[in-house]
Image (cartoon, rainbow, N blue to C red; front, side, top):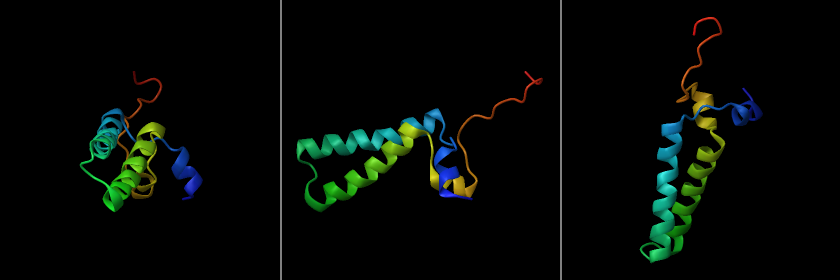
Length: 80
């Protein structure tokens, strides 16, 4: 199991990607309205950025190493 394989394996489904992108929008909104600032803003911003990157790429290295996937399974050819 290499990190390269973890980064190229799509294992985050559409619903999971949507759920991961919502906290990013919330953190951005809270930051620009002044509800959070300082260290809390930086900490939540880093977490939100990580979630956004996994959402955009469709890959999650933690899912890979745990053997998880939220992508729908593809039917083998001949079984349509």
